[in-house]
Amino acid sequence: MEDSISQTDKMVQKIFCSGKNITLIGTAHVSKESAELVQEVIHQEKPDTVCVELCATRLKSIRDSEGWRNMDIVKVIREKKAMLLLINLMLASFQKRLAQKFDIKPGQEMINAIEAADKEGAALITADREIQVTLTRVWRGMGFWEKVKLMFQLLLSLITSEDITEEEIEKMKQEDILETLLADVKKSHPIMERVLIDERDQYLAAKIKTAPGENIVAVVGAGHLSGIKKYMGYDVKGFGTIDGSTENKPDKTDKTIDIKELETLPEPSTLSKAMKWLIPAVVVILFGAGFFVKGGDTGGDMIWLWIVVNGVFAGLGALAALAHPYSIISAMVAAPITILHPMIAAGWVSGLVEAVSRKPKVKDLESIPTDIMSIRGFWKNNVTRILLVVVFTNLGATIGVFTAIPLMLKIIN
Image (cartoon, rainbow, N blue to C red; front, side, top):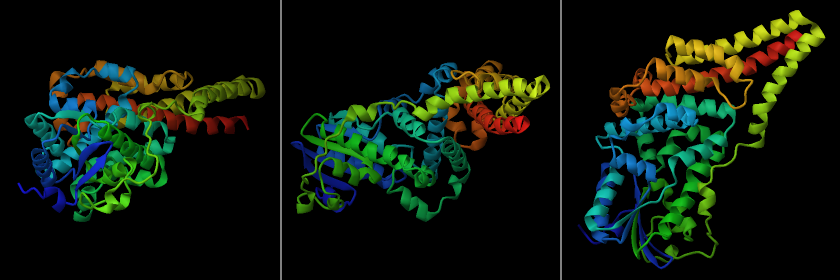
């Protein structure tokens, strides 16, 4: 291995920050060369610490590939994490199929970094923010239709990743995998750029420059290189330069980062909180108006309209997930009631019924990594199908609300 590796490879950046010599390796998530480069640089530098663009949860999943066996799907539903887990699995599916296409193990660059750190006796630091925190911050910052668009985009990615062009592949080698997947949503929703990229640039920079030791190697996606340098106090014009150039010196901008704030789950917006109570209130007022203004027959018609419209749409959502007949019935029964209760969702009811009706077996948990490789697998596996039942039932119930209320208003008028 030549000593000049960091000077000849554009994706290796050497900087001096906070009294530490830091080597940043920008990796391509779908490149064998990047995976090999990581191993070579770490063995050459013999660092005190290796920082990786992983959170503790993702590191655990790499080290414990059998962790799926311990999943409690009922607990996931009760803790309202079904949507986040489903998104996580879809992202994993996309990355796994890309890796398969390029004949490389998913996250191989990070696996190589972990193995090389162990071999060199270096401390290992997970420098990325928890994936659940990142996804939650994105989710709570999006409107309803942006969320719907996101779900369908992810589902579409399960179908279209086989037809990726060479141009798109080269783009992926320079971007964050999340940014690539959510590019279309990001164009119409600035929070995607802020939470997925900018906030994580800040978080990575803070974790890397405060890592223990004086000689540090950090393995991150190539799309984060310039942002990390910026938040470490380096002019982004230094991107791609070799160690020692004048452009690689700190600028005078204050780069103080509040890492605790970046780890905080934001409270639901005031509008979101209000809507939980406003919609039930509006429906109850409409019922009252129907009975007391138009008479008992009109009020009765409005109640039946509410039950039928919400029940049908929620049932269609469960049906789209290929739910068990009992789950479909429970969705239809629960939706008209749960929508009037701010703390319960129809999808939680149908999801729990699905979990009981088609109780996941050990083989379902063991086959998750294989089944998520195809869209058919998501619907076939008892675990992922439960998640789909929860999400699609809630989506159908929500559409039912926005369909039923205008129809009720029309009856009164």
